[in-house]
Length: 166
Image (tube, rainbow, N blue to C red):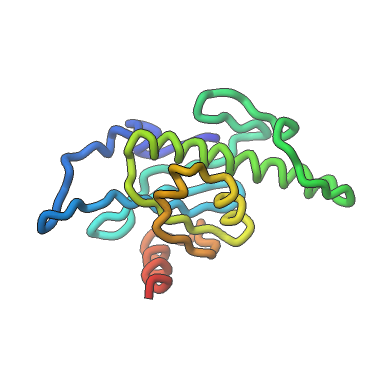
């Protein structure tokens, strides 16, 4: 998986900050992951809206995990769909990307980069994300939104998130 953006350039500790508080309450770091089968945008919630932290995307036919180990599609179990070989290959790559994204998020969670996580994805991708989450990530999920929004600007994503909370 290839990650670009502030987090790729500076690492998770680029977000280290003094604990911010308002009226004695800690203000949580909230990350929003907007994903599809091949890419994910990771945003941080700020007082001004969503700030893009990173863009993760599948890299060729092999996808690198956080620990630099290379996984090929053949190393991931596949649901059998014998009538369509193209579907099988596509499914492999989808699952590999989602698993690498979850590994990356798990490292971020263990580093304390965020307190809460919001997942936004179409049904297929959201289902694969949920199935791959570690216990630590599951405990950080504050909400999910079942929509394909990867091609929308952050302001539109924020509007969809606001609507879903009403």
